[in-house]
Length: 210
Image 1 (spheres, rainbow, N blue to C red):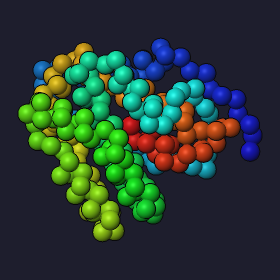
Image 2: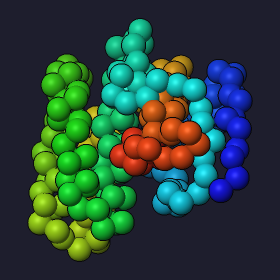
Image 3: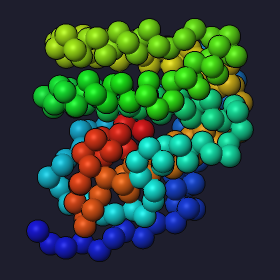
């Protein structure tokens, strides 16, 4: 395998990436509330490919850091997206035949942040997303067909979108939340790479999902 030097990154590049994504999501302007959230289907990560490293703080500290110092509105949107990202990654594990990893990852949000998320959803007067999350985990544990897993994940995504709706109309808040989600992804990616190779598959999948 050819040794590849670490890739140079800069905050401006991450910010530009975030703003470019925001521009697509917000192009509808006032019509945005009538349009379903933009979701992009990405190819599964190729764990056999060589990866360049990005300097960042990985792991759960990186996720927490993504909302550190954020306004309540920004943190609310970002945390809900991070929760959803965990379950997207869990579905990918399941798709790859890694059922135990999928089940374990599906419970990460409950252990890490759901008390705060439930408090926030209650304050916003929106339905709790926990039942949809529990149904998703139960479907994984039942080793259901992939079609059922995807249906359960779609229900989680719908619950998250409904929970985010009260804060989704503010362009500034959404842009800041998106930038912080990119930061969380960079943190997970940086923590998943060692010596140019994937050393933490779970963190790598989380980065891909975020």
